[in-house]
Length: 383
Image (cartoon, helix red, strand yellow):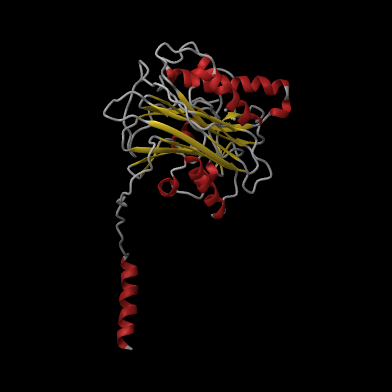
């Protein structure tokens, strides 16, 4: 199995919510980078650090907390504040869920020698029911902590844990068939100044750096060339934009009841629960992270979500209310899916006022358009 990057994040887990939400708050802890962790700065052109051809597939809970990183590398000390908000939207059932854990090891009774806090955040977008999303939310963090290589080899631990959680859910479904369903999963782990994002599906993580949106995950959709190639190499196909004509994503946990999607073993089927990982080194210019279910990104561009979050932070500096504002705006824009946002701020103060340079768009006119314009102007002059 390919080597993966290490992962750490803050946890909030949300219950079945119709039109409800939760937020996270205070808890100061020392955080130090873990050994054997590769770190790399990313920009928009940064490659995904690991891409794996197999994959396996929660809902949410939350608390108010602040985590201050005591480590003073490059004169930057991240101060973590998290919040979240969910809404059922126009759907008849709520299948989204999320989790925010300020200290993953402490929550599950794991004693770290250096007492470094590993925070864990996740958003899980269920489909065909909410059982898979809730199962992953409740079991994935614990499975990560109980892995023999935790916390020194988090990249391997996170990848294995996604797969093991998926396999465990398959066993649950074999005992109780009514649980059969699937879920996408995006998690973020923060330790010291390192941010590790793991994604399987089409939830998305977007970072604000000096007011500029940087996408830290890639949507796993059948139209993606790399995903389509992987799917076809494993006996699957894409029909009208759907995996095997049934699913709008190519990676998810669960969905074991769908024929031809998954197989036990090293090769697996075309639907994978194995996450892609990206590792990011935080600096003082990094303002906050937004994690949202796909319903958010259907009506927001990455930059648009960052702009709204920054504006609200400058107004009231409340992370939870920022999440609420994004969800409510998504509803106004006609979003018709369940909506969930988790946001993690890296500073105690609101972001400063800055002017973001927008990319210049070259505009040109075709020869035909030029002739039409010339004819129009000539006709006007002749009048």
